[in-house]
Image (cartoon, rainbow, N blue to C red; front, side, top):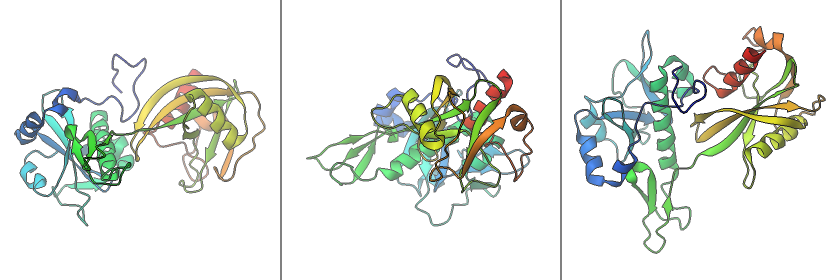
Length: 309
């Protein structure tokens, strides 16, 4: 992965995309219209949470420019994403109103980004994740949460305003913070758990959403106690990862357990246990035991722990 100046180590998958988000342009409706009409404009189509990718020996994101007019004729709203390093404006377009995914290219298909993300160049994956997250938010906020009236997009799709003049509420995109933590014993073991709906053998570190009035460190301690009954100390930040599936940011930590007896909450997890460094390093990656998805921060946390051996 590439390094960027504001990261102390390589960013996670879907993070640190190449786009200048162009915040000032969002306030200029005429400039946005001109950018959308520009011949260099690139569209990032999303259909029911799936991203358009070019299939083939090397998978890549498909950001149509030649078919821009055709695509724009079948969508009601676009979301401004920003400019790439060559100055090309990028817009997300939501095609979810169509019962079937539109055929925009014979070699392209709409795919779950979690399935194809690890196969894409990191810049491409980050753009598709960004587009997916904003499209999802706009879909889910067509009506005002204050008075129930319809909303209309503003600032290039980064706001929605209530159409009821007596209300006038302005809504902004929300990201749900979730802590994800590698719990170790200070020596040679970590706790991994699994949920019943995961693929057979898949295990991962613990995670949970941050609650109102709670610090990130408090959320780590609470979630670990709730899920496996362990008190923790030395909560240490690792890195973060946008995870728009549908609208989270994963905040990665490690922490040392100050006890070892697990009390697994079977309403939260199917199972959990301590794994040794050798077990993790030599995972068979089959139905008996497999590590988390390669594009996930969970995998990153485990690999960082192994490397620190």
